[in-house]
Length: 308
Ligand code: FE2
Image (cartoon, rainbow, N blue to C red):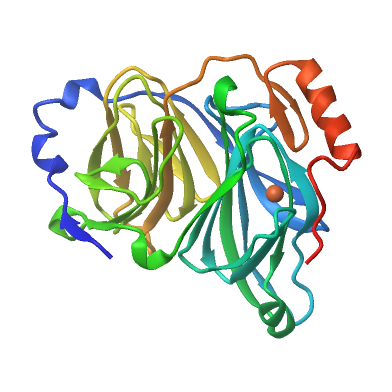
């Protein structure tokens, strides 16, 4: 684990006039996935279909499973984008049609570039399911540029121990750098397009100014606690999605002074692809024709089967 003291706060007085404003704050919606496990979906929903280059964000849990009750997502396909799983509680297990399998423990990341297509299963680990316990995690879908949509599938499995953690100044909290470069620290993940994916924990009564270039689309998902966001200091709490306008390079966030828990949130930003999107369930391409092809390839077994 890398630890560094971040210096960005020192500069914020000089650039304070360029704080980003809020485009909108929405509630995540409870929905059912896979074989019946419940997720809090930030998007796509009726109010927002995607935040270019991001296609979906789901929070799994937090929930306490009784023994034998844990559910997951059995065999299903993907083509044309990346799925990013970040677990903060419980144990997950995945298998795919290329013969890959592995476990994800709390704090670990799996960045799967589905590219031309895989069939995989994402299930709570067998022993964890038997015993029951607390499950909590996130899945983000990152779109691939047109030129990379049919790339050969590959994984980046990053254990918690390799995810840099940056301490914030004045004991305001810490940040895990899941993807991208922030606070002079570089994540272990290689991304196809410029992305910043950070997990902030801010102690009550803290204020930060986080720097992000103005060509990045940026949003926040609040995991716990409450605070104010953006230049206009709009209030948001657990389960809210805050979408920023691209009108500055500073993200201003304050955690509520009276809160009885830290403000935890995911900060996710990326340079938009600005390419046409055609999507149908687990397939995200640029044209309808490519979607028909994906469905046909899946039906004809070209994405393979899980045999192990
Ligand atoms: Fe999946």
